[in-house]
Image (cartoon, rainbow, N blue to C red; front, side, top):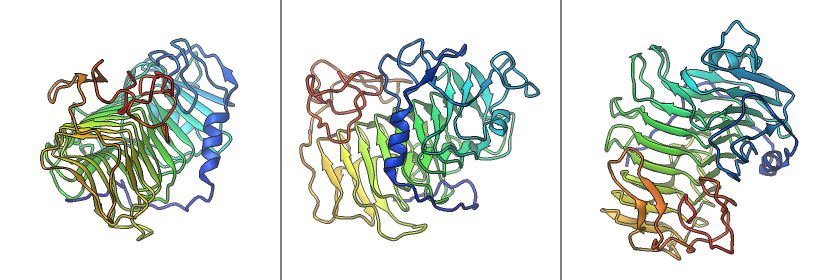
Length: 412
């Protein structure tokens, strides 16, 4: 197995010292809200975004001190107000520099290849929100000058509801990275990242659709409720779907048709919760491992892999490199991974595993957007556990003890 780094450059920042509890408090504590004329839509009822953004189809957002607006009909010489929005995300990034800021992005097509560097804090995050889920589409610019669609170096930043579409490559540097974050306590949620790095050379430069990296000493970020597919050249073991090299969570994501691993832990990855994801049609389903270390040589440990569907890949769930004895694997469906379903180390055993077809409502290896929801006869219904599970699924449907916790990204 060949592993790749996903850092976009060699600039480093200082490590943070805040505890994980600080970000959880910040994500759950914002109950005040303020209506905007850029009403959010396309977010299902009770979707439960951890940034508390979407509750109904006509929603409010957490009240923030500073608010900016972006629209395809705007101007980068404008003030960035609702009446006079900016035109580009790059211009908004120059304005959104303070904690307690929300950037509302209207539906339309926007050039990628920009960087966000500002940080929020535990009490006042910076939110980037597509006002219609997947309505704000980020695409390669006419003359690309870097390899990353969205390069975030800030801390306490939430990126919510965008589409990153790398399918129409134009001139210049080809994208190898979709949404990349090198900061701490960030949330990458509800995005649709697809067709990135599909035409790059298959070499150790690597790439990923969503990258959460420790290279700049980032810790404790969350990748939640994203749809990721068609990433990297087919069979290229250097290009990953969701690639995490630090601590945090990976929950309620759907990942398929990835050149290497749908979900891949490497470098300094440790203390990661991989919960209720659905992964398929890739080379590897889930890799838990550590190696090519940046700052530590402890290896991947205290990793929980629960309630995931890992189906129809070449390899299923695999420990590689250096791993610890405190990893745990519970209540996953792991089936039809042609080379092997499991490869664990340190004498570890998986428990509660289902070894049968998940009977998904509309599974396909080739359809653009297969239906990964469980059919009425699916064996995943009610077979999950509540530990570390979010209260809602990828579509905002409640998971609870009364109906039973399902395995995978969708609740029946």
